[in-house]
Length: 381
Image (tube, rainbow, N blue to C red; front, side, top):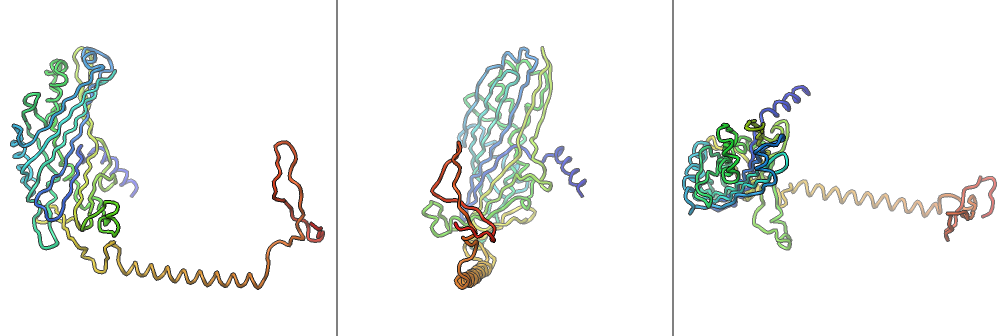
């Protein structure tokens, strides 16, 4: 068995399921829209350990590209349409009506390499995510979490037409001189799409971690500004295990040569996601779609608001009472025995006092010291 586990660990290093995206979402009850946040992260390294012309262009250089876009920005309609096409193909019943983008790429040129950090935050407005709603129960589509765009997303920015899904667009702005020198080198890894959350969808919901949080409904929570009508169910992914897979960064690399040999490396961290759902929730499937089955009340009988079975709570309380009574009885008996027997311990007649040291480093205290002498001596103290 241990060899099977070892093989699985080794293979997981060659087959990472994840890509680099952080999803944070809240699904409140009774609302027709949600606004999740997808953050796509990527780091590109241009390495020049042997120096050269490109090294001189990059060393000590610091620059950034940053902008925001919303539904009023030219080109955003195309992105929304592409997202909805992707959702239908997943499949998902959810539908995007609006979206916002925050884009940032930061260049830092060091002695032996330059680092370009990409961070793209996508905030779509999603509707039609509730498949069924019955009184206090709902069936909520969860497949929207796997949005993936593999086509150009060109929008109008202060830098001109900009493909936010292609890392090369930022490099053309940040490093025009460098890009001119490598334009014929066919470095395809610089054009790998960034907007890809399919790794979150590839991990089934039953492998996610879930936890009920009843803080909002506990009496007195208002004092600490934790107030609400219902419990919150938190679903999280990203834990590394044999079942889920090892936490490996996703990496690409490609070498090229101009006046010197250079290398380009790309790193993306493990996917991560957190979805907070109002009410008690469990994962399931509905018509081939992964869903959350939610309820505003716990369906388990005899479970108070604390979420702990009442029978267990009363049983524990009863055991505590019985334990207290037993301790009282034992303690009382011991006290009576001590009174009947009188003082117990070493007879003072067998102890002899002596002075503490007067030598260098020694000191005296007001407390006397003594040692035990043989019982036959019975020397007075």
